[in-house]
Amino acid sequence: MSKALEQTKPRGAQVDRRSFLKAVGGGALALPWLACSGAKAPGGSVIVIGAGLSGITTALLLEERGIDVTVVEARDRVGGRVWTMDDVPGKPDAGGPVLGASYERLLKIAKALGAPIQPMKSFETSELVYVNGQSVIAADWASSAANKLQGGERQILPGLLVGYYTGQNLTLEDGYAWTAAKHADLDMPLDAFLRRQGASPEALRLMDVASNNNGLSTTSALWALREAQRRRDTKVRGMMESPGGNSRLPEKFAAAITGPIHKNSPVTKISSGQAGVEVACAGGAVYKADYCVITVPFSVLRGIAVDPPFEGAQKEAVEQVPYTAITQYFLLPKKPFWDEDRLPPMMWTDTPVERIFPQRDPDGRLMSLTCWIDGANAIRLDAMPEPDQIAFVLTELARIRPSTGGNLEVARIVSWAREPYSRGAYSNYLPGQVTRLKPVMAKPWHRLHFAGEHTAFTSPGMEGALESGERVTDELVARMSA
Image 1 (cartoon, rainbow, N blue to C red):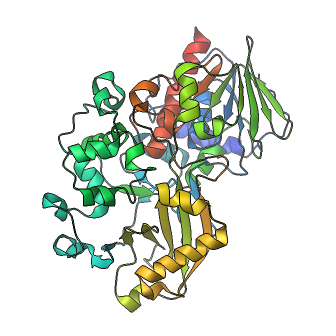
Image 2 (image 1 turned 30 degrees about the vertical axis):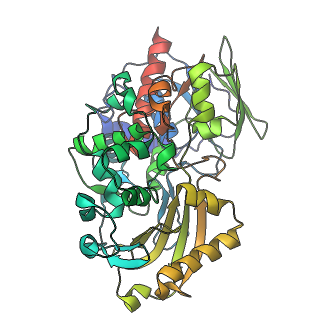
Image 3 (image 1 turned 60 degrees about the vertical axis):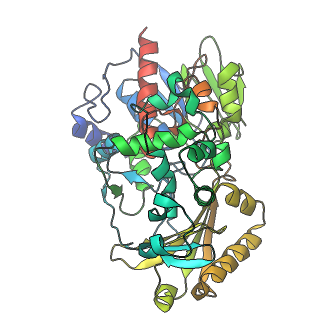
């Protein structure tokens, strides 16, 4: 049995659990929302490290299969990288902002738990593109003098260029193909692949500005081709959201867990022995169980002592798989500058401030804006003191869009690369790492198992977190039943 040295959850959580069991059909043998076999384990205990979406889902599934679960979380909240800024007007999501209508697992478990999800209200009908020193309405981009792209590229907005080129002549057969040895020749630098596809120098420059990774030259083309395959094969389109922010989802999931969730408990050491595992935390608490599921990013795991230490390709993955640097500045407008210059509030730029996304209330009123910066630009800003970062962002915005001058203040900064329990927004892969490391990086190590978006194969983002929870639950039930 798990040995927890702190308080257990209040009895009120049992009410949510009973509602959950009723909603999904009565118990562990009826889990249609994750297509599990439902076979009960003969008994056993598991420590889950991390109360992000993957850890919470793993705990739910393990409990439904008859396994005793203790969750250990470093932060003072659940959700991990799903994080709503409740103290910023409009409640923007700093992490987990994308919830696709194709996320079948997530939508079904949310429905079973009574967590509301609705189609995303879309208010943005236009975008301002600032490129080569000129501001252009998106509808005018193809004919603009600021557009230095070549041939068919000219018809594509800068933010869509990566998808345009990776979607051409796509050879990946399904969601697993991006890790197959037969496609190892595509495990090459993304910029080299895009160049081979016919991308012009200007297209490559623009794609490297805000490519959702740390740089085209240091990213495997297979990482981007995986996204192209998903876009091609997704049958259900559209975006969803949880009213009040996507943090409401992991909070609702966590309320249905019976076992304890120990917050403010950063793990310092994980030991796997012949008879079980032992997890030690910074505050002195020690937890013991039969097995352990590690859901924290590898970028965080590399700072935790593991005994026995990892070996071979798994050791390389833990130590070297990169995570994307993303830094966000949540901006409050003092007055509607977009009415003054009559330009769209949403922006894509080829400057260091990269992208601006409006956050609106249910009635369509603009409440705040998010300046979203990734890769090299985020890393450079992260190296500055926060007052210098703020001054740089506001000055740069005023330079490219004068109406913002004196009209914005920074309410909050979130740097995922500097956040100690994430060390990056999501996993990425260097050229050569996908085919060499991905198939083996999450294999069980002694009594340690792995979940988290970095261990998923076919699903992106939050859905990937649930996919990994489903897989690791089946692994543990099979192991305990052997």
